[in-house]
Length: 297
Image (cartoon, rainbow, N blue to C red; front, side):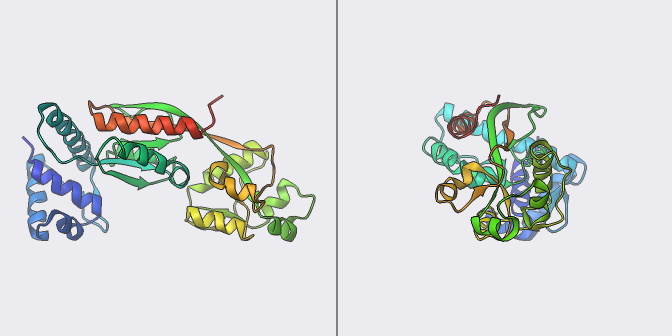
């Protein structure tokens, strides 16, 4: 049988990125944590951690992490059936920036009203979240990829709509009254990070019939700051309409091409478990998404 105390140490060291922080959370010495993980590696016949900064899991370690997360949630459910008090197991989820900036707080509110489980949110691009689920680093995610992972399920939530926006001052300064897609793409724009290139490229190709072009873009990895940069007239930005309803109503941001929007389909993925906590979280995600996302055509 696996050493679940050691697996718990392993999980916390991974969660907090190192032995020192993991030991603090566990209220153990760093040496004690290191010894537990060494014994775990001896038991499973191979390394479970890559000892870098931050530490990462080996392929074997990722499999063990998936197993430990499943066991923790299942034990909680069994304890509830047996009437035994137990600590609510955390649910780890991977969510992209735009969802975090717009509607996931409503999911957290709805879920917290029903369950005491902490939700540990990992931030990743919607093209990368499913990979974190597949690797076992999280138990659920929102992704633009619909195919379920092995041992998991997925459901289409709806579309998140994106348009290209700029401030009136920016338009006057860089574009003038009559502008073309080519003129806009030659003026200063914004990217969140390297993964945002794909989203902008999809918009350029499908909405503007242009080859992807990002050479004039600033990089600014902050959802709140991203909107502020556009409002302040620093650059145009591809933004989810959900995020800037107030700025649009106040005339501080204007769609550059009002008839052109990019609909990004979002899917909720989760590991298949007999868990009330996961079922409640999935229900909250689907209910909130239905109220804010555009139905898929």
